[in-house]
Length: 432
Image (cartoon, rainbow, N blue to C red; front, side):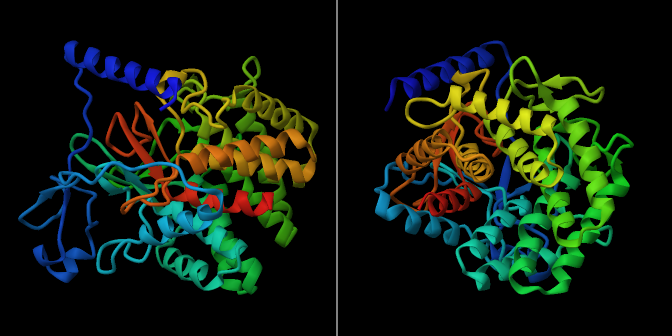
């Protein structure tokens, strides 16, 4: 274990103890497994294997999720074995048929605890794109068709569950819906030419434009319980731009170009921090920046801005991209990784943003070739290899530890995200 990781875990351990002494015990939502024999098939189809809380409709008896302890993961896989390991992790993450979301994939794995976040259906779109890019159309189309069946009449998707102390909150999210439309529907459309996938993406885009603010900013999500838009926002909304850039390239419809231009201008104005040359993590209800600079946030910003620049050819966008990349390159650690929060590095490492950043660097390299970009991507990929599990159910997962548990409802833990393995495969192919 590196000195950085030792320092991180010591800091996070002290942070946890301090919160407990102050009476602020770190808590996470207590979730329960439901086994197929516990409920009827009709009830099972409304429940996840693990992501059920006490106030959901669930059968009895209930078993607390994550109560079983899995072996610790061992990390470090050789270069020749990485693609097979990452692909295997993705295959293993499939949600069993019969459950809600059956046939789609869990979003992540918690070390010593097991699979997590089955409600995060939006992350499946990364798998579709990866499968299409590596020539496995059957696997990609299978997931895309399942996602297509979940599309709401509005054109968006209920992409995840959020949790409060009293309720499960299904979230209909424009930004994550755009991720599905772009990476799943349009990826399959480009290969097959089947109009239903293009129509799906267009319906999603039209709904996003109709629900956006006058300045073009996209709200983070619609609370399906209370029928209200959530007031805050997150940097992840940046990848919305990629959908509109792709649709304009495919259809040449001016409405997509106009919205892309308006959205990107608003996004940069609200989220970009010129003095720090990077993007804030979130906005409060008054559009005030919060939360420092998360590594994954820089990745998602670039994932939208790079295709936007390809279409708009705007110098302001180019400068923001180049300045953000300069910050990323400057803050890349010697082992090739990045801190989970770039401004608060002792929070831990980023298990999911690193592969996404690496892919963004390779995408920008196609526009502005640079050995620095490729070298940084190579080093990031090497970090991914060294942090890939080589044993147990989690084999092929790219793990790291952080204070927030990487948003898996389980704090102070090591986690791996399935889409990170998909991004790593794509980066490896680009570097080849």
